[in-house]
Image (tube, rainbow, N blue to C red):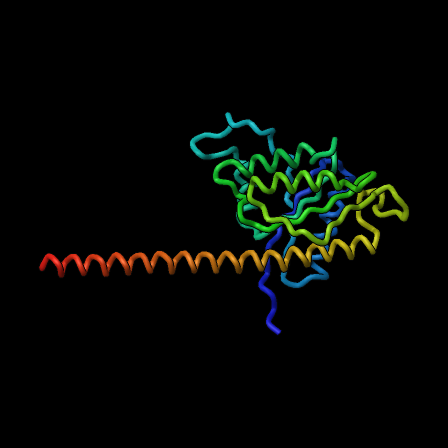
Amino acid sequence: MAAKPAIKVVAISGSLRKASFNSGLVRSAVELSRKSIDGIEVEHVDISELPLLNTDLEANGTYPPVIEAFRRKLVEADAFLFASPEYNYSVAAPLKNAIDWASRPPNVWAGKAAAVVSAGGGFGGGRSQYHLRQIGVFVDLHFINKPELFVPAFQPPKKFDENGNLIDLEITEKLKQVLLSLQAFTLSVQKNLKILLLIAFLHVEVIYIYIYIYCIDIIRINDW
């Protein structure tokens, strides 16, 4: 059986807390990609150094070096994994800030696959996921629908250690299924994009042929 093409996933945690559960999910995703899933590479990209969005920092289509470096990482990615804590029924400010910077022209999120997971109290950060999906509509991200992963971090059994590392095997397996779904969806999105580009190319070729035939007819009619 032929190996699946490797895809590169940029993983972003919306929490800046040192022992963040959401950062723990990202670390676990990185480890799973290295040890348990073929054909996928997950890289954690830190957003803690990004300045607050200020369009005065843009100059002639360029951005501060830290923003340019962040945007390059996203351009090189095939897909994205977000780990989003919930604050006031929404995504955390650091994550929204990162999304806004990367959506500045040209929007580097556009057309790519994404998945979101979360950990927290109560509903496990679920409302932040739904809000993030709404944001994704505008920036043209394509989120997988299933499986969903909301981790109720404070309910027994213990799911994270004191450093925020994921230790629950059931949650780890669910996270693996999210990555597998993201991998399959990303390959599907890329395949469909190639088909659309081919159709567009053939459409242009047909137009050129019609123009050529039309010009030949004009030449013949006018006996040029």
